[in-house]
Amino acid sequence: MFQVVPRRGRDLLILAAVIAVAACGGGSPTPSTATSSPSPVPTEQPSAVVTPSPSPSGGPGLAGAGAAMANLTSYKFTMTLAGGPFDDMYSNVGGSPASETSAFSVKGTVVLTPAKGTDVTIGQLHIVETGGFDYIDLDGSGFTQTQVQGAGLTDQWTPGSMFSAYGPSATGFNDIGPETKNGVAAEHYQAGAAALAEMGSVAGVANATWTADIWIAADGGYPVGVAIVAKASDNSLAYEMLFDLTNVNDPTNSVTTPANVIGE
Picture 1 (spheres, rainbow, N blue to C red):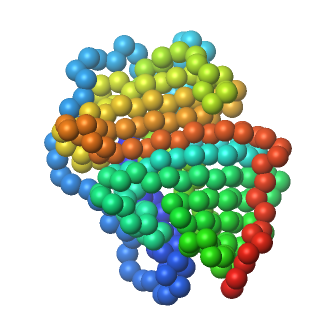
Picture 2: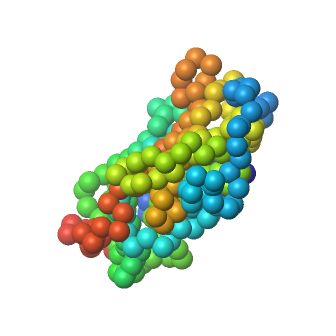
Picture 3: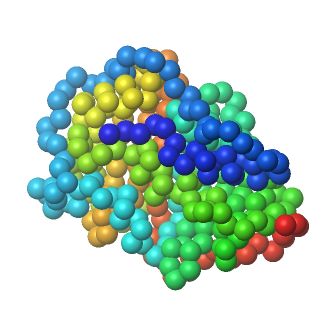
């Protein structure tokens, strides 16, 4: 139900190679995992289970939420990631977390139609994909241009990819009811005890308390917001995946070629 192994390890290695301006071979990044027993979770049983069909309250449900993002024309996003595979992913793009569970930020703009473009900042790293090229700026000194390879360097860092790779299935969540999230009418879903226990077990985070909340847009069925967090017994952060979508289908969203391209 809850994936913690990156599905695009090869793409991450390609990105690491570009950043290092050197050849990079070998296998995929190895996630930071540890063998442990399932994490402590609330003992109460969920009062309802969300199924792929619409919920009784009329919400769109979780099934297909990740895929529904492909139907959007554009959006802006902010994400915070920590723990599990995210630290390895960050290291592969030149990041150096202060500790294994230091959170780092990802933000940007995604345009899907009429022409695809993405503008993503990962810590200090800035990547723009537009017009068939990736533009990479390591530290604010200027962009290096490379031709897009495969799916593109920014794809694995967008909320759609994160939700598909690391998000939950459509089961084990309670329908909390309608709420407004990021200015959008949405249905709020919260993980029940069984779903939380599985997250702790699969992620290999021992002695942690998990919470998981997802808001699905009433119109469009895409995830407006996600908050999946694990706190260790000392209340320190053990795992985190947060993201919020804003400016959904806003016609002013755009991705343009950077002005300060310094090399190819």
